[in-house]
Amino acid sequence: MKNEANGQPSPCFPVSLSEQTMSYDIVQEAVLSLWQVVNGLSSIQPPRRDHYRVTIFGSARITRDSPLYQDVRRLASELTTLGCDIVTGGGPGLMEAANEGSVLADPHDRTKSIGIRVDLGFEQEVNPFVEEVFQHQTFFSRLHHFVLVSDAFVVMPGGIGTTLEALMIWQLLQVRSIHNMPFILVGDMWTELVQWAEQTMVPQMADAVDFEIPVCVGSVDEAIARLKLSHQAWAQCSP
Image (tube, rainbow, N blue to C red; front, top):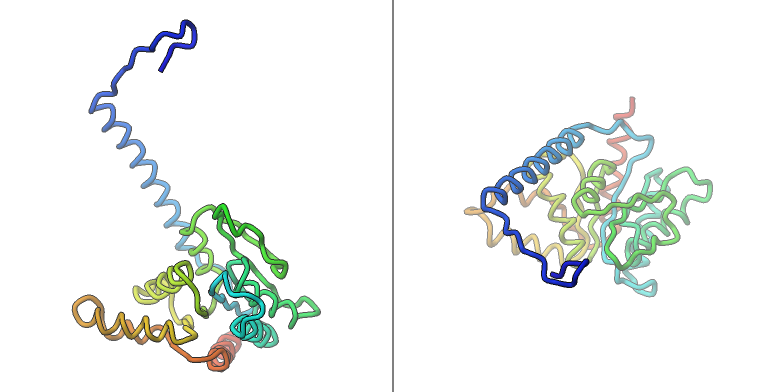
């Protein structure tokens, strides 16, 4: 590195080990304090919503001509007809299918089509059927937002991101951070994943009861039937 005044190399001043330790301790303390604030905010329970909200996770890469896209659009439309809000990641693919189904089934704008986005540096466009969008900088805060605003979760086929979302919801239900929320996995890929996990984790690394949490179904019609029952129970608990 050169001195800007005379172009000569600038002296290098090494940082001592004690200074490095002090800097690390300050950063660590700041980060832990921040997490305490986040944990405090996380303990706040949101008020009961006017509408039952279903979050639909799924691949961003499925195209409009896919039967799976049509299935998800129909799933969201059926739920919207019941009076449900639909929540997605707000992007393309099956997220767009769900938001589209919500909008098409709600010409009088009685429910909401919601997108919760994350800044990835790509896939930045919010799909045109999102009526209310929230933007996050981290996957952590985004996933936590899904939990705060949802009454049920449907996981459609997807890639690594969808798998991350599914496993997080599964774990939160496992440790009872969230309670009594339908967690429905649609498609053979999830059935096979749950079967693999059960066969390899039980009994040494997981309890058999943990594998009763996800409900694996083969079609969106089965998912709709289960969600109708859950929505009915939710409506009966209205104040």
